[in-house]
Image 1: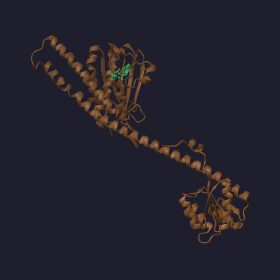
Image 2 (image 1 turned 60 degrees about the vertical axis):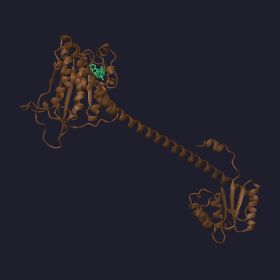
Image 3 (image 1 turned 90 degrees about the vertical axis):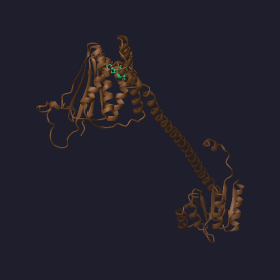
Image 4 (image 1 turned 120 degrees about the vertical axis):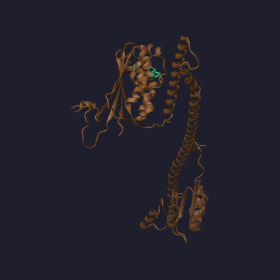
Length: 427
Ligand code: ATP
Ligand code: MG
């Protein structure tokens, strides 16, 4: 448990503990008497080795250290104390009869904090001791604060490590859940999807008109449910970063065809014109065919859904050069309608731009920034009439982001909407 630093400061300080080191008994006793009278707790040592042992046994708050001693002299004791990080911060006052400049200089070099000339003046002794003890007290407070901070950092680090472990476990459970739920949701649909067309083909007996109509409705509903499940699973996988893309060179024509097929029946029912303008030859793009098909399918589906009867939905694809110009706008057109790109290094990256344009209800300007948010639907009767979960565009955005492909939208309320996707041409 970490202690509050204010509590540390408020605790009454015990008497300071001072170590007196001197080989002369007289001098030791005098210092002992002065300091004890002043309220300090005093210990004595009569040579350097004894002094070091005393410090190791119980580090004092201050050391009064005689310079001239047999064996280990005061300089050596001071040097050893100051070069050990455990004892370096204990203030050392050197006691010296030699008041000459050179000896003090040597003491300073070895890290002594102050000097006191022998014979000492009581008042001077107590003043120096008090002032050095104050400095030592401040040092101890800083050290205590540092320890406290280190403890707090350690506590926080432990808490974060704990949270990280929890997150990893949750992530593992989520993956497990995802793969279970995928299986559980897909499996029951398999026989329904398999038998319905066979029933409709009258493989199990002839159907009345009503039965055919009902089975047709069921097939469409199952198809819708299947798509919804696949979208949900794809979305969950993309959100959890578990959907690895299988990138490769992809022929756009087939993907566009499949994307249109997804909405073709609805377009027909609504009397919409659904057209593709993709002048061949289009180069293959670098993409995941299934994911890209799903994304474009959603854009086309939205265009069909939000365009009233009699309207138009147009899907276009064209080759752009590195600067984003239409390749057909450069130079003279070749026999195929596409001019060769300018020769010479380095060849700028080429892109194919795909647009899905409709003459539908449009999106209010204020809603445009939000339409890519998951579950967001413009709150209008049109949206309610058509249902949906509001996941479509969030999924599109995820898929295109994973491709590093930008998505743009332009829309005018009551006039129509255009979504634009740009994909790199496969090298
Ligand atoms: P879901 O795609 O899950 O079936 P949804 O189509 O409502 O439901 P999104 O595809 O995410 O959801 O689209 C979000 C909202 O953006 C739509 O509800 C609609 O309000 C608006 N929107 C998207 N595309 C168009 C469009 N082409 N024209 C007009 N509004 C659009
Ligand atoms: Mg949608």
